[in-house]
Length: 193
Image 1 (cartoon, rainbow, N blue to C red):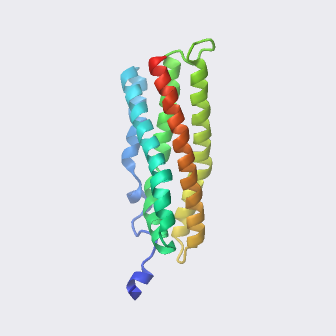
Image 2 (cartoon, one colour; image 1 turned 90 degrees about the vertical axis):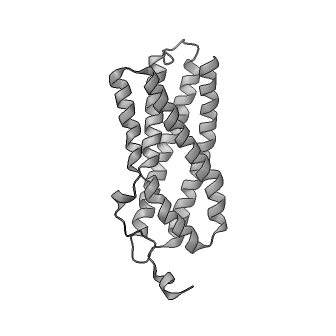
Image 3 (cartoon, rainbow, N blue to C red; image 1 turned 120 degrees about the horizontal axis):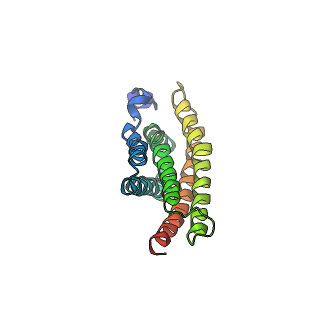
């Protein structure tokens, strides 16, 4: 490896606001439009779209990217993490909060949240799973990502700390992916039940 390759910083010279995936802000905006218009179709569409993107990303991170990262050496692993983390800081909160909120509103509009409704137990299961995933995501994964981003900004980042924090996030992403598959089973029950 050349000397210039050794000195390249882990941290991108681009400011954080240029690395965020701003297009994800469209999800809550579309949800708000659906609420203002009282459009069941639009609310359902944004719920399904954001849910699919959240589920797919979690499954990819947990079951594809996780094993790939484990096979890389420390330098390559932290380079991938340095590129990935800023791009997920806005992505995951936007798709997850839109999915959960739109789902709750749909269940409410359909009367599923009324005790005694045939779908009420399923709605509670979905709500419990989304609550657990939201707490994990906003309470553990997002703070870990912010810690990683802060560490990457240091002149000499602690690569082991970065990898350790990211490993926690990858494991939780896999756990969330499994919970989301369970929620998909619940959603399928809503459609046919």
